[in-house]
Length: 143
Image (cartoon, rainbow, N blue to C red; front, side, top):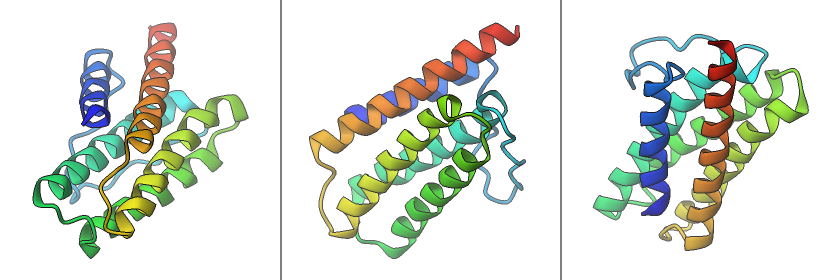
């Protein structure tokens, strides 16, 4: 799936530019995202990785309506919404909201026990790409 490849590429880019989040260890508490996109990047990228891993597993197992999987997607959407609301400017918050919208659309389709449509995959990939680009730009400015 194209969006999974983009999510993996995004995670790699974040690791290479020092904007990557912590590993996906759910036993570790996640630090608050902060009030700028730059400070939110590590957590948002970690959420993308968690979501991509969950989506890939559900796709392999054809377990789209698995409650654990759907709860994971829903928690990612909620956290992205919280992060977006905490970012000080609309311009910086927009990539996070677009990503949340992409995950929400995936959740909607998967809740109906459907595979992710191509248009939703493209929407998600575009949102992930734009967010990754914004994080890279902010990281390069900081360095």
